[in-house]
Length: 316
Image (tube, rainbow, N blue to C red; front, side):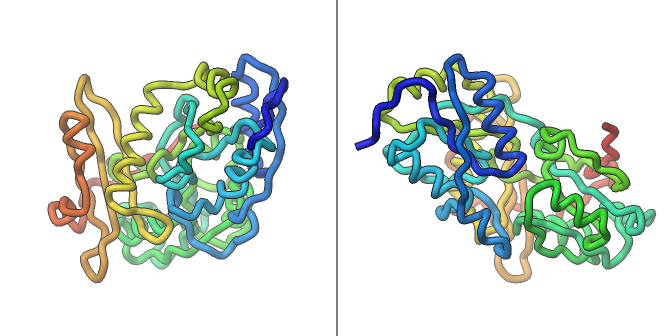
């Protein structure tokens, strides 16, 4: 049986700079005493696997959840996009912090900055570091002559690899770059429109997980929940589950409210030569929640637009 703890709450997290930022932000906003404990995960050890996020495996979360279930920690803090879609029934997401910008950034080494009419401002045959199948599929869609390749490591490491010229460009979540206040010079930075270049479901959101039977931790954590974020990311993760997306599927989803209705942009890389397809659906939330693989046939295999609609310089 899990141990019933007294003060302080113990917050479990990975040890990367970004994970520690997230855990310390939770620690800061909680209205109770808490301390942070670092836990090493499979994702920290396995550096040669292309991950989509939201799989059933939990590369970045499994060991933390095991410690939570054992009662060795009271609160687990995750990048929400890393969590499996199906949680252990003994665990609950008790809160989400206010969501950061959901978009991806394109960071380009000056030597590989292109000035042609391509939808991404890259020179032909540019090697683009992309850490997920989703990002690799989108590079192929919007810049077919580019060469998407796996990149792993934490956010500062990825930036360093691009600055050193190991990649001509990299794709990175804006949330991570800005939360760590990283110096991106000399890279040229562009923001990719999230309704066209779809993010991972729940990208930019921080999930706070507790044991379902821990009333003390649930009450403390519920006080820091941001309901608008929770509503959006819950819908995106529901769609991830419906479309059977995961670490072995390139899948993107972005949901946002418009009045009392919802918009949801959904994209998936389909087998064979069909390629990436995406479509934006608008309607009552219930009508969005029932979307699934049968809707894939309605998605166009290509999305064509002006460069300015997809990619704009980001001035920080």
